[in-house]
Image 1 (cartoon, rainbow, N blue to C red):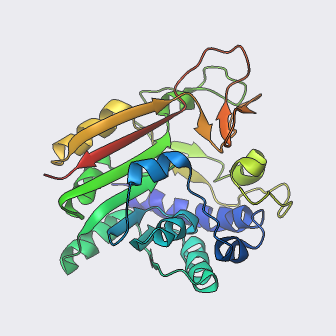
Image 2 (tube, rainbow, N blue to C red):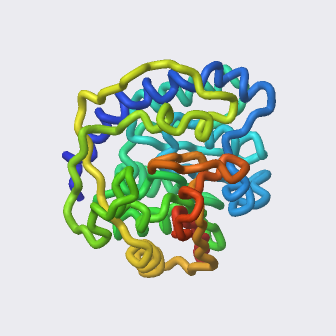
Length: 282
């Protein structure tokens, strides 16, 4: 486990979160008016969560956590970013939605929660999460430990195959990469994606954001993810792939095909841009 790289990522996310939220307007009003940031895919995968305990790993600034809590779940959101958790805690209070938020490296949270004997009906994580994990096996075992018998792990993320491309759709990155990938820092993908990631309308906010803190990402293929979860004792119930990316426009010419589902340019062969997985603890 490369905790020093996690610490670098924490600083990078602290800076980026300020920029991201600057584009999202009055989020408390959005939630008070009944808004939700969940896409239909997450809602369908989660199912009826009323009365269930949900652990939301790498919850960022808490918008999806609060959307799940509004559906009747008791939600605990965990994220490494101080800025994200402080924002999430304030947003919950201003939105009058009950949720608990914890600032922690996900691996530290697994250790601490296990010591307290915590267990959940659902562990959930989504969109841009696995690339920040330096030890996939330890993560999978932590997910398994946090689930009650019969509990479910619900996961959706951008497809690792799509990450082989540069922004102009040229093959650039290695799918089978075992080394941390140094980056210039977490970028302002919210501004880049415009209304795709801000259902209430993207505002100008911070312009020309340049992160002063570098970041480090890790590559995990679909096979590695499913194997790690299986070896941690979880039973894979479904694995689905999607020819679009919810909200995100990482490549040139991406177009909204409806419902903020972003697809490649017209005429380009369809490729998997997202995948989801549901696993159950026996």
